[in-house]
Length: 565
View 1 (spheres, rainbow, N blue to C red):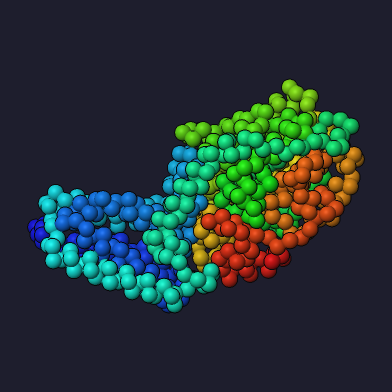
View 2: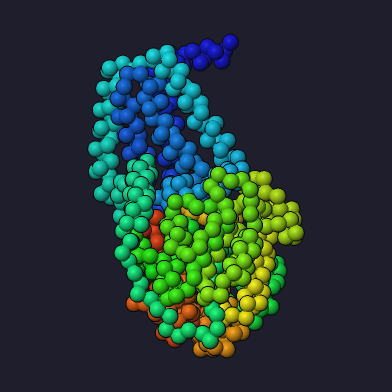
């Protein structure tokens, strides 16, 4: 009876409901106080600016419940923001996160959500009751008085004026400036949503904007026999868990024994998101000139122009990103996973198809294998016989379960080692002049330090997301015919590199010439130049990677692993 009376009294007080709604909407802003790199004035604006906006918004209609119902999209943004806090412990919803929502398949989303029950529970606990209250207030026609609405609106307007004045001394320590559309929540999230929409629309126009592009590519020095070159795109793999890179567990037993392998020690991605990183690997685009991606075709077109039969095989689903458009430029394109499919295919399905392709054709081949690699949920990425490190059944993402997460992740690396070993065996059996380049699109956080970050694609990257494994493998036949390329690869193995080198290295490796090839970025050429490595920001701006919001722990790891910066 007491609870019912409290409920009735609450619903009979428009002012209490008004204050409750504003308080609930301010929760993400309070969280940002502890995470954002703002000076004191900037932190004041984190609360003052949204409070001013909410005062004005909630004064707009007499029926306070109706106002909140109309603002449910804002609650959805808040809920999304709370999940971002849980995963990364900082920053606001990024442009790439909105795009990931559009490009993530249903099964992948299900795997992720299954590990975020704590975050989902918190979101439900906060925002579902808010919606229930708004519906009850709407039905009861709980109304704010004209005087209350007028005073609250004027108060919000006055606070907004003060905010514009405080913008002058406010500063973001990362950018050395302050802008409402970048630093004031939820204005920055709304801007990111707008930016994501604009990028999406530009991407959809890609077939038209790139239609007339040509590389003018040609094969300058054909081998004496058939040639097969393979680009293996890894997924979410980090060298920190490869024994090939010094990890204590023996996760790469086959690769460590392969004398035909060249291990590139200091490789970084230019983006911690798949749709941008893979796009950079497949094209001439880089952090420095990313805009060219909207008008140029991919490496598959360059190899086709040079007379190669091109194959694109993916264990990921088509997701309406640039990768889909590039894959359609191949002579043959096969996706083994569909967006609405729950069946899990392990990456070896790609090799089965590749073996059949090699058998039925005598042409020179260029093949892209887009793996699922070590993408969460890790246990879904490998067969039962690779469940070596146990327990590995991940039911919850938390520090208490980190050992299980790492066990499952290490098993996925063990399976990647097996996959690449099988690829070398397949290429050796062909007796062709062959080689492959393996590079992961980005790394992964696995609750490694006090910041408790998990997964990738965070607004600010980490050391674990930036550093990637990169490998070059040459068949003995290739080494005999083009020993200089192999020698240069070995000489260059310790020089710093980023994913923007993949396109140019593969063309140089296959002796394909085009005005768009940059020899200074080739890992198998004599003209390799070491340049400052850049990172592509959420708003597609190039910045030095070490200024991309890295924490003290990240910088320590860069120094510990001798990563140049």
